[in-house]
Length: 536
Ligand code: J2J
Image (tube, rainbow, N blue to C red; front, side, top):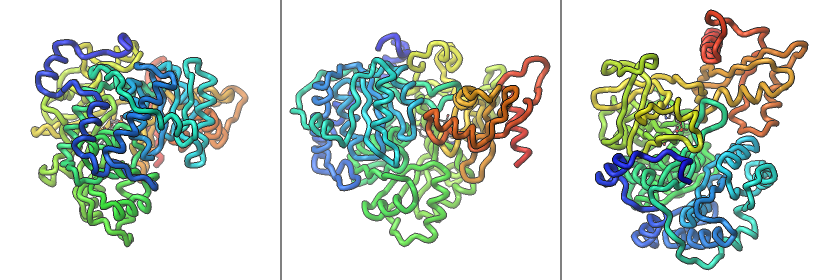
């Protein structure tokens, strides 16, 4: 995949190796060592399944062999779309052992997103499930396969065909390059479709290992995977991979609602889990009237979107556990409040970076100059597990990274003298819908495909539950009068994740003119967002 991803400069890579951050181990080799250390201990639980580390390891070996037998070759990209089922883990480790490169789609993604992931990565296969939550994933995958020439196989976990594949005789396969791309994660995106994020074995294992340490995971910890595990946060912060790294048990929750989660917390004596703020709020409410025993819960991570002070204060008393804030991004940088931080820091900041070698700059968004300590500015970051470029995105990379390799996060932050960051806002054209990221431009493009739409601008409006919701302002084409419900239905039918369908649609005769001459989409969005706020 050389040329597709931007590696760290050789002297920087050498530094990360010398510092012991990058240890030259692949995920396949990691699982082998975990299996020998924690053999009989429970690795993953879900539904009727309970596999120990030896069983997980053996399954991953068989699946690796089966995938190789199915004609998939090292370096092949494979779009992976699985919900929170135990099979997620042996399938992913099996892919890693076979040298395949999973592209981590979310269960919410539909035809339009999957087609883009498959086409952009020239994926050789799609691995998915059959019917799940009233959606036929296998049918969508087959439709995508018929649209995208590179896709040769659709493999459906739970089918007989997959069971045969997963019964293959295990054999040693060549271990991939630990500094090579292990998988493609998805960006929240701000322009067009989500960008693909190439992460290496070395860089990701470093972030997972340190996350497990910072969150104090130990072999008798039990991690509940409440959010969709393909997402970077429940995957790695510390997530299911952090839990395995520590020899802990992973419990897969089919849904994140309080009833399901509390039942599993009680039944499996869950010690730690991670949620987004709206879910934390729902759990806090539900905790007041639950009969479930939540006393095993020690730590609740909250992140993905800003956890407001009021909510932060309620979590400990309501759930009887400690709050740990996490501010991260699939591109790399992850910040945690530490378990021994003073209460004020835990309640009032989003944490500090994992690594002493994470470089953080807070700059004036217009001039690019560093702001005075404690002032608000745009967050730039560079470090041992933050990418230097998106996958196959040369043009976008020129804007998203500084010439010296800092990633422009698009977040506005303040930094305290301790290094803790407070996230105070956002400079990117994205809506953070309770942790689910919506790129304004992607939704605008869908709306503008409607014949009755001349122009569209999608902005965030404040929402008491989700933090933000999407509002689409639409100017109709001459003679057309599209309605809100019609446009929402239109976007949905184009095959997009449900969380991207605009929550509100405002049809307006024309957009406000914000500046002199030609209005930039950016200024227009700012003006409309201000207008939307005053209407609240
Ligand atoms: C405010 N904004 C936040 C927070 C993320 C751990 C945790 C989260 C993600 C994630 C992740 C925030 N307060 N606590 O990958 O490993 C917003 C910021 C950020 C963007 C990244 C992880 N935590 N955010 O959310 O790639 O705007 O990763 O740049 O989905 O979410 O989104 P994503």
